Amino acid sequence: MPFPVYQGNCPKSVRKAAKYKIRSHQGNYVVAITYEVNRSERWYPSTDKHPSLVKMVNDVKSEYAGNPGGNFYINEFHQVIVPVANGNENYYLAGEYTQPLRFEFEDKIISGEAFDLEQRLLSPGSDWVGPHAGIPYTLAAGGNDIYFKYSPRPNVENRCYLSEAVGKENAKATASAIKAIKGHLGGVFYVNEFKSIFMPVQEDGVYRYAFAGHLDMGLWFPKVGA
Image 1 (cartoon, one colour):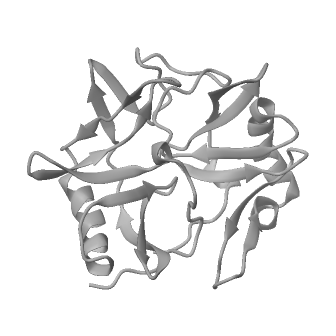
Image 2 (tube, helix red, strand yellow):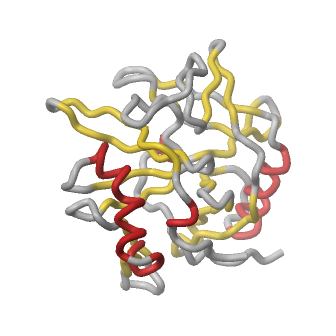
């Protein structure tokens, strides 16, 4: 069956840790992540509790790439976005998935919810210890607007600004929580399917990931696609 090409924010050139993945495990397909514990250690947890999500992604991969398995994303609208390299890399909308993804590993629960590994609620500015799987956006220089890049056709790149979608004051209100953590110079941040906002920040020459609160969908980009 055909799937629509996704016309919204399509992550490109992101690290392995910023993606979900369908992979084979003991004869079955599972949902997996790469979890960066620190600079020197990586965990590779997986879960077999989401067979319908596995089927959604594998249906797209099989339709357009000929093989199941591979990377995918879930955005803040719960849309499952599946990249496929079939000549040109296209992103397809597989559908929507609202069940929370949680990964159990060495007696820890890892998820994109705003909790630490001891299941304590995070506050803005806290270290982000969840998965890095998320959709990248950019806080514009000055810290008063947000944008993402989109390629509507080959060799063309557009910037979609939040201020154009919700107005300057509403965009500034959304950006303010991110600016408080990221700083006025701006830069990339991520939003996941739990609407958690997290980002890399540099302090005294050392990078860490920080939590910046939850997205107010009433002051955000409109949903794209069915």
